[in-house]
Amino acid sequence: MTTFTFAPATRETARARVALQGPGGSGKTKTALRMAEGFAKGGPIGVVDTERGSALKYAPVPGRPDIEAHEFVHLPMAFCSPENLIAAVKAAEEARLAVLIIDSWSHFWAGKGGLLARVEEEGRKISGGKFSAWDPVNKLEQDMLDVLLGFPGHVIVTMRTKNDYELSGGKVTKLGVKTVQREGAEYEVDVVIDMVQGAGTVTKTRYTALDGACVHHPGEEFAEAILEQLGQGVDPVQVIVDELVREGLTYDRALELHGQANSRRLLGADLLHPKTGEPAKLGDVIKEYGQAVKPVTTGVTTPSTPPAGHNQDSAPTTERPETPAEQEAAVLAEVDHRRAAEQEQSPAPVTAPQMRMMHACFTKVGLGHKDSRAARLHATSLIIGRQIGSANDLTKDEAQTLLDTLTNFGERGETAAADFAEMVQGLENEALTSA
Image (cartoon, rainbow, N blue to C red; front, side, top):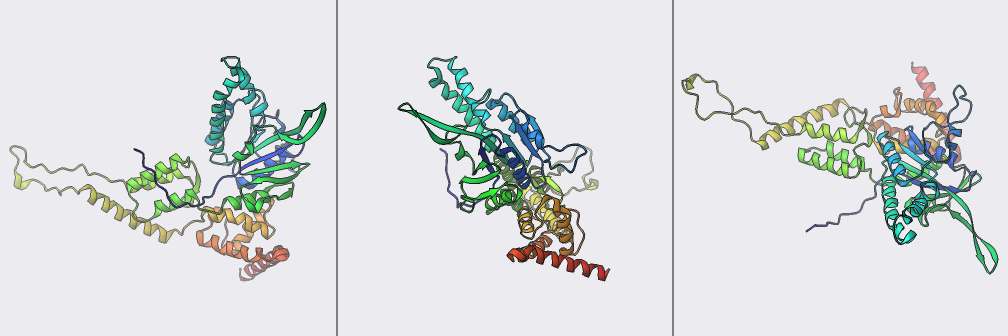
């Protein structure tokens, strides 16, 4: 009999699931790319393009850095079957994409090879026509949704809209705008944004702070606002890492953590290594820590009876092998000793939640734009007192000092950017004077 256990509920940080809907030319693709840059934090962005290559209009032009463009990898798709979308999402997962854009999701409903076309096709094969055909097609759609919504990165889908009319009593009445997707599709995502001539209005969201928000040309800043809502909770990756570095980790516990990460598709999650601060994958880190505490056997045995003709008095003595429990205790003691020594030599690295907060804080002091990276690094180096080449170089304590400083100036409202710039200039003058 299966046993079920309730546990206290905690809110976890999550990946964005956003839908942009609107008529042709309303700015869905451009907005998706702009928001994806905010979600990706420098990571790779991928586009499944069912719109005959329309996304390529926003790709970089060789030799023309002056033309505004967005960097992304591109996958054109003409036959929009659920099987093809499932394969595309799995390819995106293998490519470690930070953000996956489906442009447009409508084609997987009403396009060539889409679900409506599949119903027609299946209806011709089985008795009962279209009505009976919906059962296998519904299962296909659920498989597609499970894979898409289970993607370990952020997901943005675009959906077309069209005018909806009703004919009644010989009179045509316009009912409003209808989305080209299965009715209720908007409930599969966290945020729905209606696009009209480049302006976006949130018409459905799980987060009160975003409800009804209207933004002209939504981009990185609006993506950051969504991330802020998603990030108000515990980071499931960080929870596992905290368990790994905690004193008393056993091999069995490491196996349990590996199973948890695998079941939640987190083994490929990116993080900074707890010891070295280098980029790593969660699965590799769990294996490393598990191997460090794995019980070992010496393979040495003590014969109870010496071989015939052997002088027992002259035989070398062999120590009695340790029991598994003693071996594990010895290994754990050694691991704890090494871990303590490493922690003394290597300060704890910047954490994932701290990294997520930095961009929002820099935005408040006027340095949130992607072109301001050099200015952000310069200001950071002055604040923490040493030169860095990337935010990944920060220690946990340095990151907290930076965040405290940014928060202090960010709360000043209209004068935040000017006050922060003045402070940075003061630090720079001081550094030049003392040099």
